[in-house]
Amino acid sequence: MPTRINLQMLDSLFRLIFNRYTLFLAGVYLYARAVDYLGGLEAEFFHLQWLELLFVLYLYGWFYLILRPGRWRALIAALPVLVGYLVQDVYFLAYGKVFRLIEVLELPELLQVLPAGYLALAGVFLLLPLLVFLAVINYRALRLLGAGALSLALLAGLVAFAPTAYTAFVQAAGNGIIKYSDAKSVESNGRYIMLFYREAERLNALTATRPFRQRADYNDDAQRQAAYIARTGNGRNVHLIVLESFLDPTLFSGARFSRDPVHPAFRQLFGEHLGLSLSPVFGGATAQAEFEILCGVPALEKLSSVEFNLFTSAPAHCLPGLLEQAGYRSVATNAYKPNFFNALPAYTGIGFSEIYFPQEFSATRASYFGTGDVQAEDYMFDGALFERNLAFVASRLAEEGARPLFNYIMAIYGHTPHILDPEQRPEILQVESDYPDDHLQRAANQFYYRSGAIAAYVNALLEIDPDSLIIFVSDHVPPLRNGPNTYRALDYLDNAGQSYYYNRLLVIENGRPVAYDRVRHFDLPDMVLDYVTGGEFCRDQRCEFREDTPMRARESYLDAYYSLMAHASE
Image 1 (cartoon, rainbow, N blue to C red):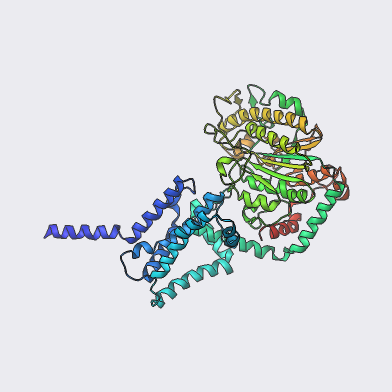
Image 2 (cartoon, one colour; image 1 turned 180 degrees about the vertical axis):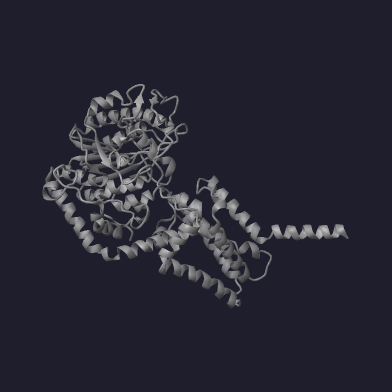
């Protein structure tokens, strides 16, 4: 008798553990691992996605109940969930960015250009499973069908009509929204949860910006600005380079160095003509710096913690777009991934006509460069990126009838934790201070090599394009080991107000370095427009990067910000 009871208990325990729901979750987990292996979204956060797991368990349970009894019932019930995942993951693998509901509107155009083979695969792996599922539904189970559909309708209604409530719930109950990466937010909270979150976020933006949405007037104003630039312009090229965490260690008065951290070629080129620009962020969120540098308004974070995440590719008429309309060739080169900070839709909306990412991260897109071997340092060295860009620029300028060039680069080397390749870039200097920070030690050594790469690039660029504007600016200073504490302890810029929001700004006008000490990142578009119009732009309106013009408070740009975001998020 005891043996029989034990066997019954074991059988009951087995059935309790190995039921259709645990097997379903195991299948979802294995699926996530497979996608991770193929280079898609990582599966390391899977165990944290409790909201996602509850949602897909609900879907699976409902789907199972509404199907007719049969041998494959448990498997068929999982098909719609799997198809939903496949759509999002195939999109991510193909385009390097997270799928959003608004992109369903692009489906008709996609089907027109999709090769026949891909259409067949889509039919087999997406359409066929859904057809099988629909064929097995018990349409007589009206109560079950209605109850499940009502629950989903309530969720859809919450997202559509109370999007603020939905985003607040996910922020409170989820695992955090990762500002710098849409992909990591999905990895942390789940595909479906973030799919609805981004849609709710977009709807929030549309509501907040509705009074500012006047597309016809907005386009007309951009055309007038472009016509003005074309009429007054000198046709000179502009090279704008944003450097990841380009920290000048000489700005720490509380630190001493075993040797000069500035490369001799850099010091010879710039001398004391080094400027500073105020970033909207400290330690991270590069896209906020890019937003200001390219669009000319403060990153006020009124609609999202990262404005780029709301860009949908709709024309926003920022600096690159205005220059493009004025006859320039606006080209963006980004040394990292196209899904990082929603870069691809953001760059498209900003107005770049050509957008290049490394071949390793965008196999389906044309590119003129690759990262090469970055295993030792994780990120592509500035010098390697500059060499490839220099060759690209030279080829474009040599083209017959070449248009003026707006050459924008987003470099990534120097990112935390500032790893150096001991063979190519060994540490050659030591930082001495009463507040040691190993990240500063490595960043100071990186600065030596990076400043040398900048000097080499500028000298070579001036040989082929001497009468041009060249701007280098750091996106933000790095957090180092101890965040603001290191900056305060070592007297960064003598601990003046907002000191650790200031970054190096290097400007070369027609071969001559010029220092600007009171610039904010969102002043740089005005600097560019003043240069390409030979000074006409700032004679006609306020240019706050000039010393004779008072600076307005950031909040005074709110209307311009809402107007821009109203159209960028369409």
